[in-house]
Length: 385
View 1 (cartoon, helix red, strand yellow):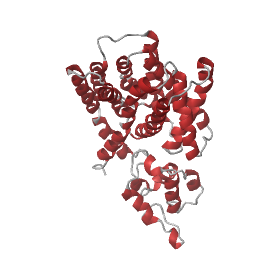
View 2 (cartoon, helix red, strand yellow):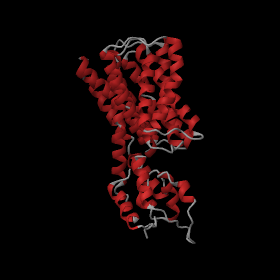
View 3 (cartoon, helix red, strand yellow):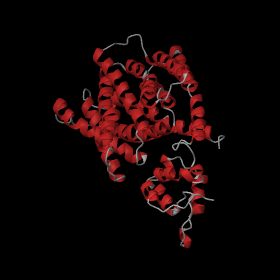
């Protein structure tokens, strides 16, 4: 099993990297297509409409403590973050804003250490430092300007999002990532709505190009990006995932060169090399964490074939599949084993898209299919003796 874990972790990290790549393209879209000087409106349109559409497709509301948790996460990761990042984008040159936000991996590692006891590795911290230096070489220009409000907005965005990202790891959502993202987008958008109306007034008229820009930012840069990002945070160390966030300015620079005719010289090439070096330098911690988690029985990382084969792991499997309460009500034999219809597990996996949230591979799902005796009118022992 250990031989598969590094590959599985690498695949999760590669998918999570799509998020900063999409976010990096947002600099060009914001400057080129969106209405100027309307950061609150821009943040609102990017969050609330797309969150409502996503919630309509995944109609499940929070329950219990998840009402206020969704509000907190929506404010940190979406509402306040969008406002601050838009303010930074409007008040600072793109290179300056990107350089300041490149400190995010270090902040995330420190917050993760404080909130969830995830001690940062020396290699990850060194990689974050090298990557931040590379970002500075990549995007800073000789005529860069320092606006105090813009600088404060950048650091505020970094701090709030870092806390929000780590809380995503600490508070395990009871739903799939699409629903979880929808909750945060709606909550963040509702927080933004009255502020945007009071501060900026009525929405501006939108040109077709602005509508297209918002559609791109909402779909690719928000819905898809946050789903894969939250999934990476749930399954991998926060420091490792935050490091791939340095691809944000790399993406922005490449798009600027390709579409806006921005210059690219020796210092930018060196900066690009340093960023990639910094990202790779911090990734050995992923393999170590995955192997350690599998050895210790981390329910977020062990395969379902482990969960269904070990007696006391049944509650873990049931909880992940959304069946924990049902399983607890079933009678148990002397060994503590309970019988449950595997078809119910498969139904839950399909209904809640658990194959994405849990990383269930084809072989693992086949184990459950082979155990499903529902077609013969029986119940299968989930222990797979």
